[in-house]
Structure formats: structure tokens, C-alpha cells
Length: 349
Image 1 (tube, helix red, strand yellow):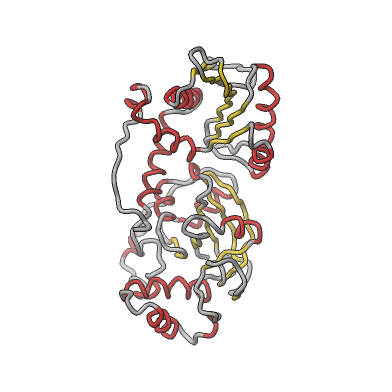
Image 2 (image 1 turned 30 degrees about the vertical axis):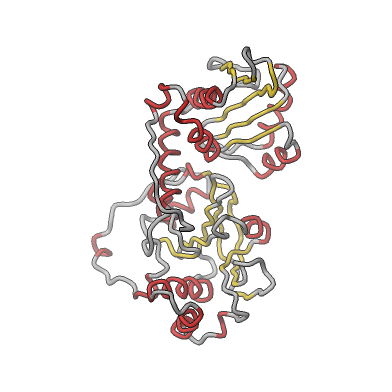
């Protein structure tokens, strides 16, 4: 059994399609099914003809990904979909053979059916080495390193990441795969440096701001955004960890009640509704739920139906808001979490 990462568009534009229909895939708009090609060589020749200025390396990568969707991915293999719209990962099993659907959304014409095991596993539950493997910029590739299969199965079953086993010296001497096969392995291309940096910051925050300290971090982010903030002490808080308001004394709108959930547990709709119910008790007009472990689909749906009064922050949102005010945030936070800006060439560059 193999582990495959199949993305849903450079910007995550096909994530909902993949999760709702149980389909993963890649695109190549030639009007032909991949089964029209007798072998990888004929497919590669057609790819090279369509992009005559592409390097042999690029042709190998593109053709290898298409061939993987058609031929190499097997029914029963694990499939991983790192989500761009929130800080989570979907995991499933391949449930069907290759199909060509020309009317599918752009980027999903060449498909494999998936039975999703879990559509929203927080990234914080995966070891940094697995996240590094998931971070390749390829649209479809195999993850082979660090006991990925057993670890992903354990995580998707609700267990802790058991980590990699000790290296097997007997396997180290085995011959590497051919160039065409290697083109879709997890070490075939440079990782997504932006995502790697984001995951590194996420892990540092999880280690240094757990429990009530995460509520403190959120309070300091809001202070840096111009709010007057009252942070409740540890213990019973009546359903709200901190209050924030505008104006010299914090009396002006928006007046926000915030509930903060640290740890890896995914917040469900009950958490969102409890905050909604507590807001009138504190004179707050708006609510913010912060959950380091992310949110269930029902919780997200509840937030959408209360769009003008309620917001959800997962770990991605906390990091993004922190980065936006980092130069103004209290020095205690900067000391515990020293960050610096690093300029790199964009993926789209």
C-alpha cells in the first residue's frame, strides 16, 4: 500500500469539489483520456510536444504525475489532501480506477474516486517530517519516507503520531527508482518554503503558548490591532476567555467576546453555540472562537450562517494575524517567539 498526495489546485480552488464528491485528480486539457496512451513514453512525448520550451526535467515531472493518476495509484492506497483554506489535512483511500471526465472543473479532468476517512485533521497532529513531505509543490506525488503509511493511518484513527521507526540499513542499499518513477516521489522537487515556515511557526506556538497562554497571545494580537482587552484569569470564565472593544476605554463597537481552545482537539458546533449564548451576558455584540486544533464542518457551517456576528480562527488565522501586527506586539511575545521576515521568490514567480 502506498501513500499519495494529490492536491486540489494551486490555490485550493477544487478542495470543496474533492471533499464533496469523493474525487481527486489532476488536469491536462487535451481532450484525450490518459488511457489513449500505450505507455509512459508516448505520454511524455505528447507532453513535450505541447510544451516545446519545457526542460526534460519538467516534462518528466508533468508526465510522471499524469501517469501516476492513471497507472501507479492503486485501489486501497492512502491519499492525502493538504487543505489551503484551513490548517488541516484530509485523508482517504483510493476507491476506484482511473476515469476521464472532460466536463469536470479545470484541473480535475483525470480522476480517482476516494473514500474519505477524515476530511479535517489538524496539521498540528502530524510530525514535522510528514508535513515536510506533504509540502512538495507537485500536484500528485508519492510519500515514501519515515513510515508515512502506518503513521497516517494511526493519526486518521485518532491516535497520536507514533513517529518514524529507526532507519533500516538493508533498505538504504537498494537501487533507487528509475528517473520517470522518481519524478513523482516526495523528494523529487523543492518543498513549499512558505508552508514549511508556517508549520515551523505553528509548532513553536503550540509548544510555547499552550493552555491559558494561547488566550494571552490572542489578547496581545487584539491589543496590537487597537483593541482594549480584558483577559480572564485561568479557571472558570463563564464561556468567554477575553473581551475586546474599541475606544479609549473599550466601550465602543465592535465589542467582542472571545473563547480560546488550545490543544489539538477539533472544536465542534457546540463550542460555537456556547459562545453565541454567552455573548449577551457580557454585553458583547460579536463573537470570536479561536481553536488551535481547527473546527468541524458543522462548526464552520454555523459560523457561515452567523457571518456578520461571528468569526472562527484556527492556527493559520492566528499566525496570519500575529504576522500582521508582529512589529507592534508586546515585547514579551517577541521574546518568546522571535520571528524575522524572509524574502523568497513566490511560487507564482
